[in-house]
Image (cartoon, rainbow over all chains, first blue to last red):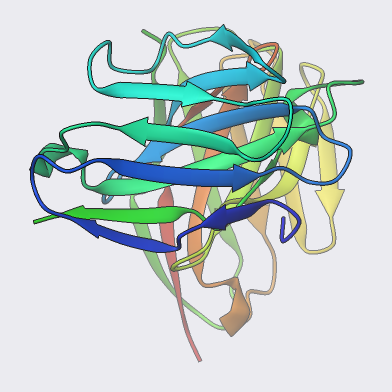
Length: 116
Length: 109
């Protein structure tokens, strides 16, 4: 899973600021998934993107959260006007989109967001 | 929504002992996955199960996909200190993974 690169690894934001989390998928992968993990919890699905398209954002809060995966560059998860409840670890996974999508998904090391 | 119940929540075992943990679901899944997560890291896939009743091994790890497609177990034989971590079961749809809350494993040397 070292191939999926997320940055920053740690991010501290004050309430009301914006957080931008980046994910570069593994080489050759065009499918990206974002998950959120609260302390002592499992990962929760947020959004699934392919290049320039959002396929499923059913797990993402309707307000303040957005995600994109442009033609060039990393996928971005953007959280506007952060609140303390947004503090969590955010994981990105990527897959090639061929074969069994889910079992070919590799996770990054995550970005740990702390809102103070 | 879909929920996975994973047990036990935590385990303390002596090095060399065997470990068993399981996962049950209120929904049917077509694929079950077991992941291990170490502190500060992302989940790493250990075993994937694709068919009901399937029993699959990966070194000292063995996992089975329940016949009802609503449960799975993971066994670790002859535990070693590096087995420490949190083990997550996950039920998979076509692309979305549903995770349990994890079993935290501690191995006493």
